[in-house]
Image 1: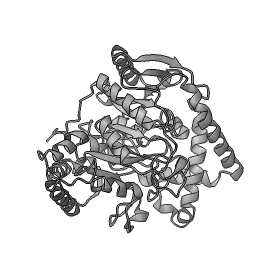
Image 2: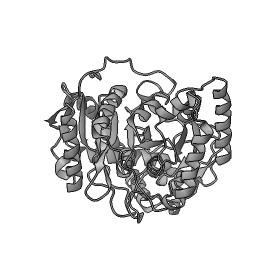
Image 3: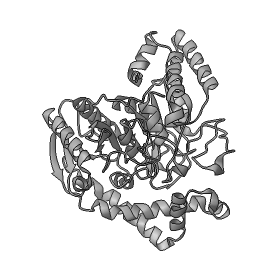
Image 4: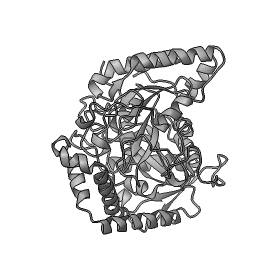
Length: 452
């Protein structure tokens, strides 16, 4: 399968006059036409508008004018995020007639940086649990799940249908599909990226973030995404917490903490093997890796995560769910029923537990630069009835810590595996540099190959 250049390489070639935006767009559209009838990554692709935007950006480039670091770069947007004049269906028949009146701030920010929005990528219904029609291209029979809920964003990126994509994570909806599909992703610090114009699942847990084949591309995309205000409060556009001195520099290999208890025990054998091989390569590159204890425990965090997500999803859907229950899928309907049954006292207690957890989680780091663990407990399950479990990702969504997931190899079952790196709050840029160092050591370059 032909792969696109990295965003960094393509941007440089456009500035040097060796590549045009229209050429990039046509390559992406060719991949979409060739494969999307089988993998179902896209809800809608606006070919006419896309070509028009590419021609305009090429005219600017010919005059030496460049919009920004994403000048001429084609991207996909998860279909719970508003893109002007396109529907935001959120995977639900309830929103078939919806048309966005304006871009979400994160989409507007990408456009200001020069990005071309190809269209909307498939999401599971309301970014929850009912599987989408998207298929994992690593399985020639197309019977493995791509994960969710950012299923289309991951598949579009790995298939070269776009140069990068935007997804969201409430539990594991960036990291899990990225891992299952063999691409990189970044779940930023909670509150780092503006969520206005994004159909919510949980106000305390939702994180928009980028997907791409390379970590360097994630860094470029994240730099172009807008901040909503300090700790995610509305009202600002580019403000945020004060910059901190980075605890790690490129001059030395990183010090990583491996979360072994529960995690390596719960991971299946192909994931353990792939992770151990990846850790060996990191150690050979000079990384120091030591086991760390996770006193709160992954198992104890899951009920708190579920309670907050269910209550806040139910609050958003309450009136529509009461009127149109039959239009909801069985899994999200179950979540909403659960949320409607949670008392105000139990919800308040879960929020208090969340605040305590977010304060205490930093104690795990000590003198370490980042934490490392498998991104998922299994490779992509060989079924289309599930999008997988978030139990290896939800603790970090609760923590609000930045996470970068990078493919580390093809497991013994033929499906990709990944490791995730976890950093301190608001040290997203530092974590991305550490991830780039790890990516060089892992040297993952495999890609799915569907039959022609």
